[in-house]
Amino acid sequence: MKLEILSKNENREIQNEIISKIRDLINYKNLEPGDKLPSERMLSEKFGVSRTNIREAFQKLEFYGLLKSKPQSGTFVADIGQVAMNGMLEDILGLGEPDFKSLVETRILLELKTVELAALRRTDEDLIKIKNALDAYAAKISLGNDYLQEDLLFHLEIAKASKNNTMTTLMLLITPEIIGSYDQDRVCEGDEALSEIKKHEDIYLAIKEQNSIVAIEKMEIHFTRLYDYLNAI
Image (tube, rainbow, N blue to C red):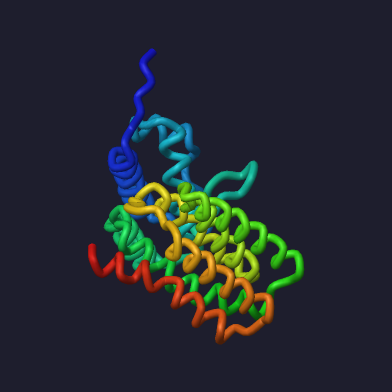
């Protein structure tokens, strides 16, 4: 049996087709908030797709708050009116794959807030984790090695220190896409490498001192190079 590997676009098309059929099912049967949807197995047979495809579509709709899954009970329509439900489903179906520029712009907006909250809410344990990530980043960049993952880990630890689970979740969602899309066109060396390490150290020190204003300022300085990169795209 040949294993078929679908591209991200193909998988999204299948999901959108399933979501469209779920929308039609809800409207045709006049399902109301709290009504139960057919099982994954039944929809798999009805739509001619795998149960995994159905499960992924359910999970996506649950993520956006349109469905609710109850263990051992099934999947139910969320407490949303029909007009709002259809409007949100249309918006979801219209979502495209986020481009690199949009992802990074979102990351910047998130991080300016997370670094502020991290400075106000961080614990001693958070500081240790941020410092460890900083040291790993500094070691990689000093050697002229690929440092992207260590850099992003540093920023993720700051997000965790913000104690805002939603912001941390959003960072975790967009980080893999950034890693996969980012074309690191040059490796920092010499004075440039030291400058980048210093920017990270300044952010860490502002968080350590619980100075949220300085933390935001240092994060903005850190993003100067990234702003230039985005403007050049």
